[in-house]
Amino acid sequence: MEYSKMFLLNLGMLIAVAYCANVFYKYVLSKASTAVKYASSVLFIILCGWISSAFGFNFNEEVIFDLRFVPLIIAILVYPHASVLVLIGVLTGLVRFTLGFNEASIAGFINMSILGVLGAGLNYWMRHSSYRLIIKASIVIGIVNIANVINIAIFGVIPPAHYFEHIVPYTLPLGIVLSYLFALMLRDFQMDQRRNHQITQANRLLSRQRDELQQAKLILEERAKQLMMASKYKSEFMATMSHELRTPLNSIINLAQIINEQGKEMDEESLKQYSGIIHASGQDLLQLINDILDLSKVEAGKMEIVMEPVNVLELGQVMMVNFEITARNKGLIFQLETSEDCPAQMNSDPQRIQQILRNLLSNAFKFTHEGSVILSIHKRRLMESALEGEWVVFSVKDTGIGISQEKQHYIFEAFQQADGSISRKYGGTGLGLSISRDLARLMGGFIRLDSAEGEGSTFALYLPLYTSESPPLEESGRKQGYRKRRRQLHGS
Image (cartoon, rainbow, N blue to C red; front, side, top):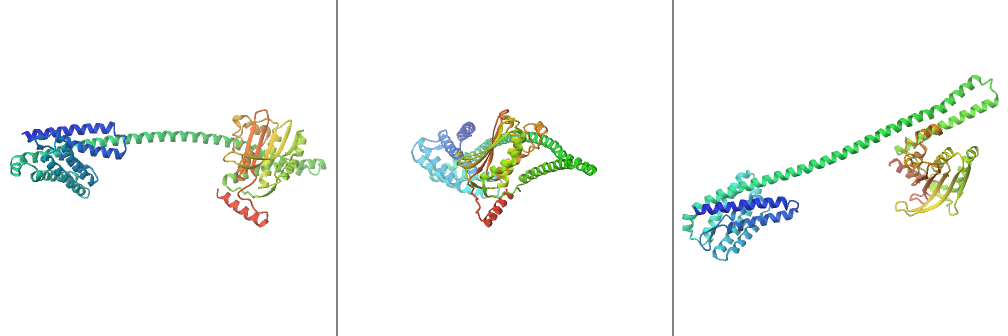
């Protein structure tokens, strides 16, 4: 009867310690590293063995009967490394010496060390056995309890005959039953902890998915707004485009019809005037079609850039010739300014540079009613990290209507305009700046804008003075560099 009370007391203490350990793990070690949790669990198993001895049944002044082997059984069922079982067995045997150093404590140390080695072997067998867990646990519990009885009989201080006759009939069945009972309780603790962990992980996953869905919703809403705006701008663009297309076409058709019907009756001056209008309308129509084609080429990555030596000063003179009459007709001052350090030559695409400058100058004259338009060419060194180096700057400054700060980022986008009424009042599709920006990027440069509403605008085209792909001056070398550059653009 005393053994029953002792073993039940041991079991109660183990259950209490296991519960405390579960609480400690949940609220203290939940965020600790895996290594810390693993080491803590090993120390907990050894602590349970010591508590079993501390609250064991004192057979006499030296001998203590307890369930110190039960935590080792649990370790055999739980741990994936067999070597840990040997360590637990040896350390559990060592802590027995804290309750007294005598012949019985030495026997207890030997007993737990042997059980640790046995547990390592059983652990290895469990991990390689195909039996169900309940069967493997029953076999382990039976073998460890029987081995404990045999070790005590061999190494203990109690005579074997007395031990087998008066003690084993009580302690062995009780040890097996209570070991099994504690294993089931600890298994339940473990399953509950695993369920809590799974619930926590599921909550974290759901929370993360909710945040991702919320973020995706915001992105979709933003994209929907962008699509709506793009649709709006494209609708406005198509309306403007239809107007721009009809205007020169109507002029060409109507005047051609008049000439066809009344050509014999018209004088030479009228015919010359009508043919001039037809020619101008055709030029406008051709320019509009070229702008649309250039935009589609840039968006498709098919725009061709020919890098070759460019006479910088000659570009300025060409622009002066092209816009001199426009300036005179509008009564505006048109000047070309070049700095002393302006380079005479650079490597770029002269045709595309002229196209950009024509766009910038056309806009400057279109939106300037009085004052001046100044084209300046100079060299500038930038110290910005991404733009560090020497640049040739073509700057177009006017005293026109200017652009407000909040609308400046719109004017370089295709299908978008700072003010929809601009195209109706001044004409044009608004594609020139978008094409100019893309052409500048393809040549390794960029365009900067400095403007204020009612105070004029300054558009500055920056092109690199030196490029990493400067073609040779020979014709064959220039063609080779052209083909190389063209392949890069097609693959962009």
